[in-house]
Image (cartoon, rainbow, N blue to C red):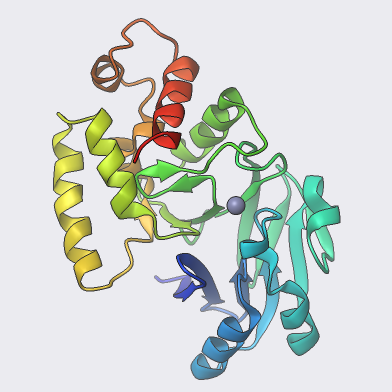
Length: 257
Ligand SMILES: [Zn+2]
C-alpha cells in the first residue's frame, strides 16, 4: 500500500523540493522549500493544502521559501535544533531521536552533521522514505562545509543502515556529474557502469534521477564504499581505515573537473 504520494518539484537551477501527501489523512508537507512562488504554484495546481514544512539544514536554497509559505498557508515549520537560529519561522526544533508526524506516518529524525553542523534527516519507516537534504546524493554526497570527514562518514552510515528498498530523496540533481566522478575512482564497478547508462538515458529525457534507493547507493556510491575492499583497492589505499579513504575520496571530488 502506498503511504505517501510524493511530487518532486524542480526549483532554482538544480534543487528538488519534495511535496509529500500522506494518503491516509491528506496531510501535506513541503521538504526544504527553495522558492515559495514555485512551490505555491505547484501546490495550487495539485489542489494540495500544506500544513507542514520539514527543513533539513539552514542553507538558503532549503529555507528560502519558509516565511512566505508560512504567511500564505499558516503552516508549522520543523527544523534542526542545532541550527534553529538560522531557520526562518521555525516552530519546532528537533534533533536525532525525535519523532515528527506527517499525517499518520511517523518520521524518525537523524542527526547527520557534515555538510552543515546541525543537518538532520527524516526517515519515514512505514512509507520506506528518507529525506536527506544535502547529506547523501545519488552517487555522491554533500560538501563538507561545516563538518569533518569522520562526522560525514558516520552520518552517511546511519543512512546506509536503512533498509535497502528505502527511497532516498536528495535535494539536488547532481547525478550525471557525480557518476562521472564515481567512474573515475571506481572504474571496474559493473553496477556503476549499468547505472551510468540508465542515468544518461533519464537525463536525455529530462527525467529526474531522484529518488534513488539505499541499495543502489550501496552498490554504486563511492562515498558509501570507503569500507568495501574492491573500492579501497581501486583508490590504491589498501589497509587504510574507512575515514581516511572517505576523506581522500571527498577531496578528490572537490578537485574533480
Ligand atoms: Zn546545503
